[in-house]
Image (cartoon, rainbow, N blue to C red; front, top):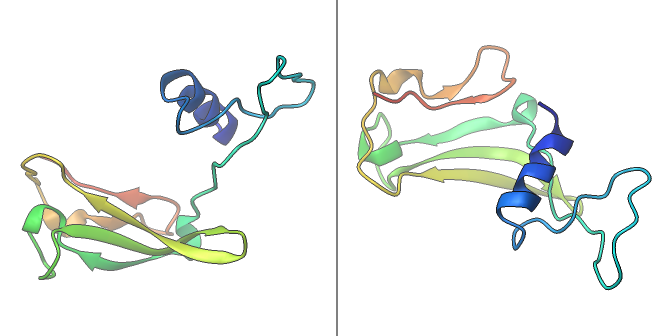
Length: 110
């Protein structure tokens, strides 16, 4: 699936987070802005700077994972922080991180 597919999904299921996606030929209805706040996530240029999702390590400190410089918005890099909102179990915590080659992030779950 594409970035545009994701954007359309978010608009349908969580419109407060993603206004109507802008696509070629789309004419928004009266009063509806065609705006997107979505940004691309680029794991090729990211690094896993903290790995302690659910407090399971191997790092210590905050119970999250941080992918540093995973994206850029208005010329400013940003990090992606992943936290568990319920008890987290991992089959192999050591596999959390970045896929070989860095194309996407990995979260290993039990």
